[in-house]
Image (tube, rainbow, N blue to C red; front, top):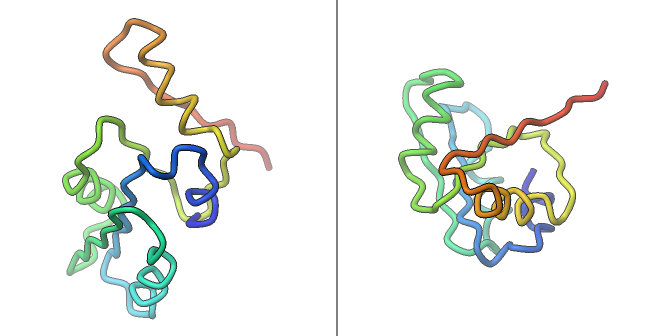
Length: 105
């Protein structure tokens, strides 16, 4: 996940927030190391584990940006994916724009 974010063409405009939902391993230490090169990285720690939805909501509350992406740990994207997704609402004339992901398996 961190590598696919780092590869984005708009990396300098991305605020990266990692939510730790009360993990019992070294996830936070690993995230700190991986986020070291990011602009404005943040780690939100939740105790106790409040589940997937509250993890996303906690990350969203900590965000300051105009657009919100909630990728999962195993997400991979083309290098211009977020740049394209951020332009879509501007070009559509709509205030709300949803991006859906096609899963292949």
